[in-house]
Structure formats: C-alpha cells, structure tokens
Image: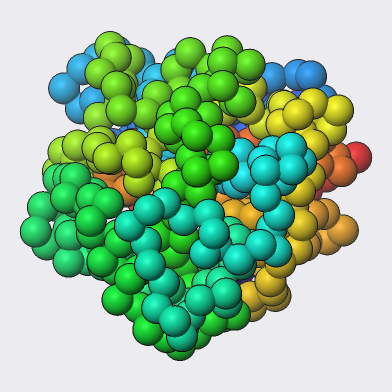
Length: 356
C-alpha cells in the first residue's frame, strides 16, 4: 500500500517545465502536462502552503459543455468523506461525548443487536481504522444490480441485517477497508448528538468554514461536473440515504476542500485540534500507518496524511504535510485512480518533497 513512489517517467515530463519556475508554476506545469496526455479528463487541483492558496484546472464540466472547470466546480469527494467523519468523531471525543476505546455496543442505534459472540469486542477506534472484522457491504453485487446508483438500495434494514447476522470477527485487528465501519461511525455520531449526520456536519464543519459548495443530498447545482467511467461512459453522481452517507456522500470543490485543509493545519482551531486526534497511529499496514481514516506515509523525512476517494465516475485525493504546513487536493472527473496517484507522485517528487 505504498502511496508515494519515485516514478521513472518523470524524465519524460521534465521538459514541460523549468526548475527556475516557482513551486506553484511547477505544479501547474505538471498538471497541464497530464491534461495534454489525457485531454478527455477534467482536472481541478488546489494547493495551500501557509496562508497562500493556489488553484489550477483543465478541461470542461462535461464532454458536451464548453464551460471550463475551475476551483468552484463540484466533484464527488467520495471516501474523502471518511476523514471528515473522522474529524467529527474526534470533535465528539474532545467534547467528552465518547471515547475511542469505548465498545460500540452502547452507541449503536436501536435495531442493532450484536451477536453474543461479538459483544464488547469492537471498539470505536476499530471502526475508524478499518480493523473491526465486521462484514462489509458487497459493492460488486450492488454495481451489478444498478451500475449507475449502486448505493441507492442500501437501507438501514440492509445494514442491521448485515451486522446482526455476524457471528464472528474472523479478521479482527487486520486491516480491511470498510464502508460499513464509517456508516456505523456516522450513526454513532447521530446517537451521541441526537441529530442527523447532515446536521452535525453543517454545525461543526460546513457552516463555521462557510463551505457553500460542500453538498450532501442536494447537489443539483449549475457548476457540477459530469463523471465518466473507465470506458468513457457517463456515470451519475451517487445518491446516498443520508442515514448511511458518512462513508462517502459528500460532494465538494477544490476551493472548499482547501479551506477545510487550512482549518486542519491550524492547530488552535476546533477542526485543527480534532485533526491532530485523527492523526493518532492506530495500525500499521504494509509499512504505512493508519489513523482515524487517514493513511500516514513516511518518506524522506516527511510525514504525509492522505485519503483517496473513488466512485465509478470520479477520482479524488486529499493530502497534507502538517510539519511543512502544506496541503493539496486533486479532483478528476474520470474513474482513474492510477492517473490520480501518478499525478500526486510526480508533484511530490518534483515539488512537494522539497518544502522547508
């Protein structure tokens, strides 16, 4: 699970920009190079270092529209939602609403009845670190049934049945990426606050930061991008039952997400204090650390915190370096995780690694 690697093909890209350029010009040159190589993919990238913000974008809102993508264009952030859920969880810990070492039993909504063999075994932190051992939603099956809206048929009944019929945690303590873990975390937050996940999100993150383009269930706005699958076909934005959306329902743009990263990096803010809690190392997998929803990568003296997001039509990434006070957000309107990772790797190797 290595997220930062040195790419040999950097030598092919180097002629597109000069080392005499400043760092943001270098970043823009790299992104432009990728768009020239993949002109069918629209890209929006935001970067912050200290208080300086930089945005660049290439491509159109869709193949049918000539309106250009910019920092306000809305994408699916998908599983980046999970680190926002983790921040809300950490805020609840700071407020004394719960403890990460608490077992989930007492916090689950009515309808969940854990089998006696798994009672008092799963901690809240286990859900956040993807090591709970609980079975997950079968997205492959859901995609086969409804390739445009696989999440639309997932209901509370689906989840309670899945959890209540689990009789053993066969891989408890081992990393296995889990959507149901974060869905349950969202429901646990609803229990301790007595509010919906959307209400908690608005109260603690979107309203204080004035994230006007960070959307949940109502995302029918004029500047929304169109997503495309790997074969070039149109892919709808996923709709989520808001009660289960803590794993991936949020849509946003680079401007809002850079504002969020800025708050994360400011340790004196409520969100910044909570972010420090999310960076707590809970597990190690293939040499990388796992925090509360975050992957923690050590490279060349740098500690990077990152999270990716993927749907069937878009790819996203959020990464930051607290010690060097920078963060970056990448949005693509194509389901192309390989391209997204290559872009980060080259930007890191050429520019981001060298910040002091």
